[in-house]
Image (tube, rainbow, N blue to C red; front, top):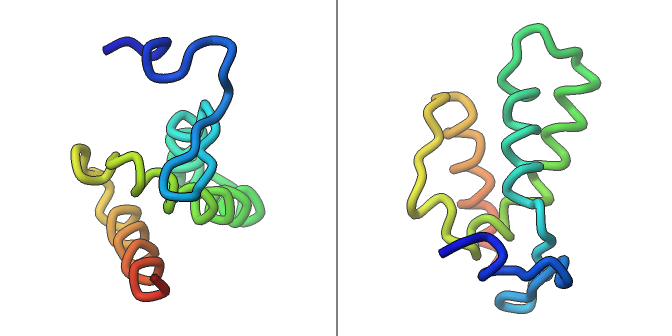
Length: 91
């Protein structure tokens, strides 16, 4: 399947389980994960990246991203797992 078959160029978002998921959510998460894992990133940049990742986790979970891909960085994986557990306990 190609990206345009999932979301055509004319559509910028989809809704799954009542959650709106914007095109670019996965790419934004990856960019923020790189900042979060970068030991040279400033505390402010890391804090901003973390906040943006928190906002994306439920959408990425609904997409099934974490069912297919495992995060290699142990600290990030544990952080994401903890956020997913917190989201699941709120459901």
